[in-house]
Length: 146
Image (cartoon, rainbow, N blue to C red; front, side, top):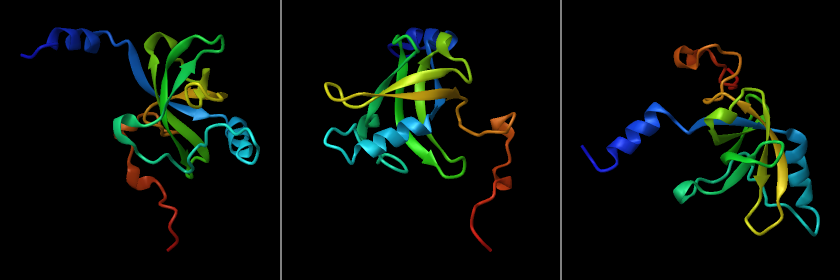
């Protein structure tokens, strides 16, 4: 037993949020990158992925289309395999619907914010597979030439 056990068991039985993947809109990412060549840039998006930082590093609010906050997003990473930018997110359970478009409020608090459209996808992010738990990773081409 430990202090907080009852609260933890309650959360496990009825989770409030769940981890999902977000697939970021490429036009919005391109706009953020393009802004780096102006006098008023958005926060830079590390490419292909943000450098790991203590305590999770940079995180952004995630909202629905009406501006209601429904979660947070972190660790945007480019997948050269899928040709998309993916982010991990923790979203309110009742707001999760695969394929739903949400908004990532990209930027630093008090600074310029860019609304990046993103689509909710499963976590972990593996497309074209019915069951991630039994997927044979050895079947994925490595991309290395023989």
